Image 1 (cartoon, rainbow, N blue to C red):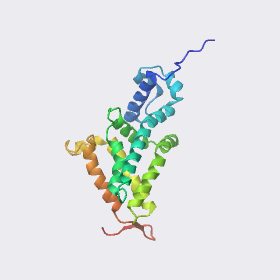
Image 2 (cartoon, rainbow, N blue to C red):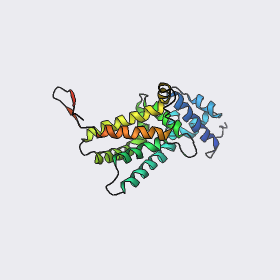
Image 3 (cartoon, rainbow, N blue to C red):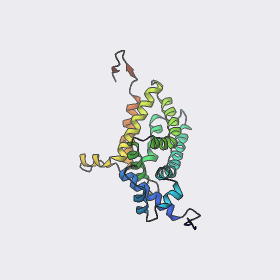
Image 4 (cartoon, rainbow, N blue to C red):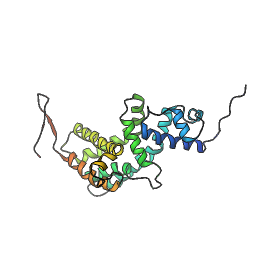
Length: 228
């Protein structure tokens, strides 16, 4: 019995599948897209998803890998550059190193904005497998940035810094996934697709939030905030 022969080298079909998956995942999330949808969008046989990536989750992992590696490298490069200056990186510079590579389009406009939206949509899906994919790509560099933020904020506990980093991620994801809301509310005056405008607002906003006083927990488990 003769089995169908698959291509022996990575060709344009693999790249077409990656591009199709990225676009569809960004539009519908992971669970809302089938292998057939991805293959149809790429104009290739659905069997190639299994050949190149194993399954749909493997395809998502490949989409993450091709973006996360350069994204994380640029974040760490910027952080190292800022850290070399006398006194080390400022809080605003740490925030810029984390946010800018995620919000500014790649030079070839090959989907960085779409990937930011994809990350935002995927992060909202409750799946242990998806969480594992995200963790594999972002946990280690995330801890590096938490360490850098903690050095800038000696008045905070690490728990406080982690909470505020969590809220920073929420702001980043919301900006990527729901850009149309502020466009509508502002009558088009505020446009998150303008990365520089977003950074000009987001960095000082988050810096003020990070610099706010330590949160104290009262015995009755009520949060009290020191006066600013």
